[in-house]
Image 1: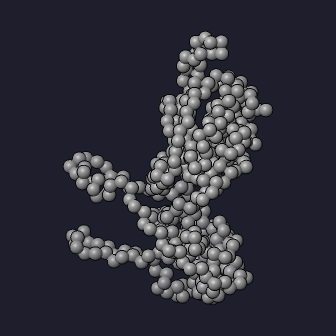
Image 2: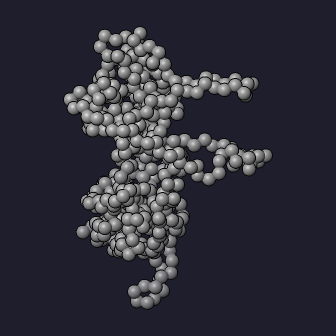
Image 3: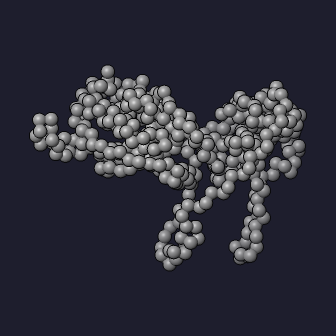
Length: 424
């Protein structure tokens, strides 16, 4: 029986995507693990691997098609002895009937809803190939009890063939629809009738940013800790190290030192190296530090894992690579998910200080301003000029209390003001 290939969910926030390119054409043989298409998600362009084998019988969604909903059929795979004649009417892609421009009262035919991936009782989506779902249904298997061995944990045919029949769990009750944030679009549009404006449609990335940051400000009890950090010793050490590393093509930035200091501070204050997990706190062992990278139309927060174990030169090279691929939207989900702590640096834009929004489930985020020359009182009690950088630590009070957050920020400051300690 022909198997439908569905639009995959390639990231946790993906609801729809663009079918950028087909790498297999109709009539081509497909094996499990073959890359068959490139999909543009809300974050990146990713390769889509087949989880079943067969022959590409029919392509239902053309290259370049935008707004393809997750779990919508995009192609049909034929098994042994099957032909395109076996596809039948089930392979026809859903489409809404057009509405004539001069017939405003005519109603378009409602598109058939896309098939939804099965969900476990706790509401978590279960990813399985169509063939695996069909076999599981025939044998009375509960997919929630089966571990997937396919790409990204997807359940495939081999996983269900050896599984024992188990009673299916009751379907989870549908979650209540979220209330819209702010006034409705029509109401806002009416407010600006007669005024010149350009309407900008939300792309997937901007929609996800809006949803996540609204969630963050509404559900995370933020509090803020601020400190000034003297950078003169760090700038002198950086100049010395860059001169020594010039032959290797390495040029350290101030941000590289901030990443390293944050990673080491999380080791010194391990109780602050934590994330909120709904009904519990997870304390991480390694220092996985996320860094905000601005791209056209949004931002990424790629994660430098085990940052406490890496040299400044290694962190610098890894950060440059992640930032370059982030701007090209070529990061894999595992490269921008996770971490317990984030850094957002607007100093290069001349911003003195600001308050950053925590990126859930992180416990804190450090907002970094510009280093500027200011008069300070030195250890001898004299007025002197120093390069001072203002930082603000936004903290999730569910995870980190005030004294603990102050201890973490103090450790970051001490490392940046005494940078040789980072090389020990």
